[in-house]
Length: 487
Image 1 (cartoon, rainbow, N blue to C red):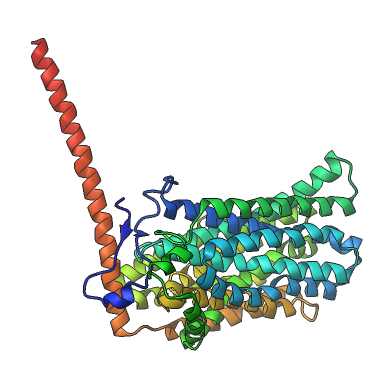
Image 2: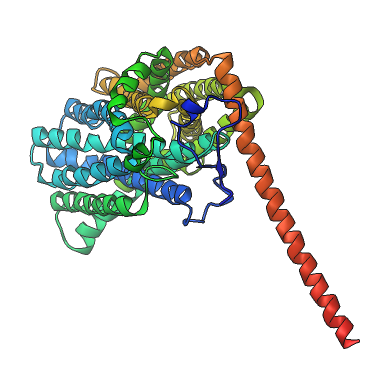
C-alpha cells in the first residue's frame, strides 16, 4: 500500500518481532483516505475523544444555572470541580494497562458505552451530594484521552507520530471549547423552544450528550481495529505481540522508570491547567467581568477552541525538533513551550479589563496546548513495550494537576491570585523537561527508524511524481499520434 514503515536493518529481530509494524508514515497526504485503517482510526479517535471531552465538561457552562437551582456554595462548586477530574487519575492508570491487555478498540468501546449512563444520569441529581456523585462518575470518561494517544501511537511511524498524537488529542480537546458555546444554546432550545423550565432544560441537554457518546461507542467497535495488521487477539496468536500474561509485568517495569513520573508532573502542569480552566473559565468571566451566561461561555470557549490547531503545532514542532536533534530535541521543545505557558498565565492573572484579558487568555491557551502536544511527542519513545503504561501514567498526571489546582479554587484566595500562583508553578515545572533523557543507543535506534520512515515518504513522493510524469507523457504521445493521423 506504500504507506507504512518496517523496522530499520541492523536491529534485533527477536525484539522487533514484538513491535507493531506497518505504521503510516504520513498523516496529511492520506488525510481523507478512510479506506486506510490508520487514517480511519485516526478520525474515529479524535471524534470519540471530542465526544467524551464535550460530555466531560458539558455541565461546566451550565454551572451558573445549576449553582442557583441547587443552592451550591463556593466551596461546593470547588468540590464539584475536583470531583470531575479526581477519579480520572485512577481511570487513566487502569485504562493504559487495559489497552495493552485487550487493545484500544475494545477499551474505547466499553468506556464510551458505559460512560454514557452517568452523563445522561446527572439529570437525576437534586442535591449537592447526588450532583457530586454524578460528576465523579462522569470523570471516568476522561480516560478516553489515554486510549486516543495509545491508538494513534500504534498507527503512525516515528516521523509523524508526534503530529498524529497532537492532532487527535487537540481536536478531541476542542470539545472543551465547543461545549462552552454549544451547551448554553442546547439549554436555550429546550427552555425557549420547547418551554422547559431552567431545571429541566439543563437536565435534558445532558441526556442528549449521553446519547451521542453511546452511539459513538458502537461506531468505534465496527470502524476500527487495534493495530495496522489486525486486532491484538489475532496478533498474539501469530506471535507478533507479547502474550497477555506479560502485560502486567511490563506495566510495572515502565512505572519504575523515573522519566515516566517526570512527564507525569509536566503533563499536570499543562493538561491539568487546561482542565481547570475549562471548569472555571465561564464562572470567572461571569463573576469578575460581569458578562452574561452566553457571553461568558463564548469567551471561555476561546480557550478551548485553540485546540483546533495549537496542540497540533506542539506535535509538529516536536517532530521537527526530533528530526534536527533527535529525542533530546523533543525534550528541549517541551521546555520552551512550558515556560511560555507559565509566563502567559502569570500575565493573564493580572488583566482586569476584558479587551486585555481575552488576548492574554488566547496566548496562554496557545502555549498550554502546544505543551500538551510536545509532551505526547515524547511519550511514545519512553517504553514501546509498555506504551499503555506510559500513556496512562502521564495522562493521569494531567488530572492530578487539575485536582491540585482545583483545591486552590475553593475560596481561600481570589481566583486571579490563584492563576498567578499556578503560573509560577508552571514556570518552575518547565525545567523538569531537562530530566527527560534517552540513552545514546536509543537515540541512534530512533534516528534510524525516523530516517527509514522519512525515506519511505520521499520514495512515495518520487513514485507519485514518476507516475504523474508517465501519465503526462502518455497524453502527449496520444495527442501527437492523433495529430499525425489527421495530417
